[in-house]
Image 1 (spheres, rainbow, N blue to C red):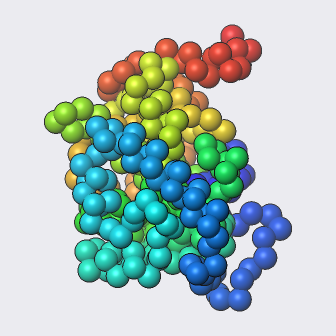
Image 2 (cartoon, rainbow, N blue to C red):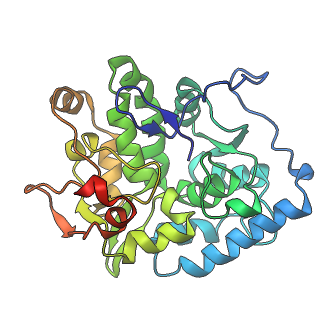
Image 3 (cartoon, rainbow, N blue to C red):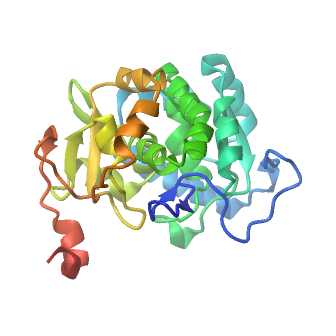
Length: 302
């Protein structure tokens, strides 16, 4: 996930320029993927990540993720070529994948999404970084995000996020909108007839969080409610303490077509909630034990 420190909330958002980054030659920050330059070792890292995640996700990922993966030129043997991905995406939902060097400024990120261009990191993590990486690499962005872009609802929802991003920034409430993105596109869960499933890229691309989010008794799993999510901090350094669950993907489609301004107005003067907070008004699907985070930092939960 691309992350940037947000001064208002103390959190980091998925977009944004890291201090010291240098702007590339192109105004939109895109670069050539340089597919032919990937090494044998880099393709091997992709293969390791792809194979273990593909074995883990059946019965965990939502049907739309599985369908999207099946219909894309994403395989186990090599890092996908963005041109091939874009050709299929364009026919399905009008999206394309563009390569960027890593973190990009908010304005650039929103502009890409508003025009159905998904900016993906072109590099891949090192073998010793298989389970955690601060910046988004090609595995997170392609394996985690791109299959869901084949779904028309998600395609519209992420475009709407791009369109609303600049407005939120101008209103001084970007932290509120970033939380919605975090708890849906990155770490969202959805109810299906056969149980709760993963649709968020941050979970789908993580070997350990794919298990933790669904199976571990520690986190809360709470029904999604927009104002509640806008007021809830999130974890950037560990698994989430709470996951918000939508009833179906059409719930996101409704969010793509509403004006968030009244919500911003309601919540901006209200106190925020900590990641593990459970409210009496929450629709709690599973009340977590909080054991994972307590055991790692017992003093903070005393």
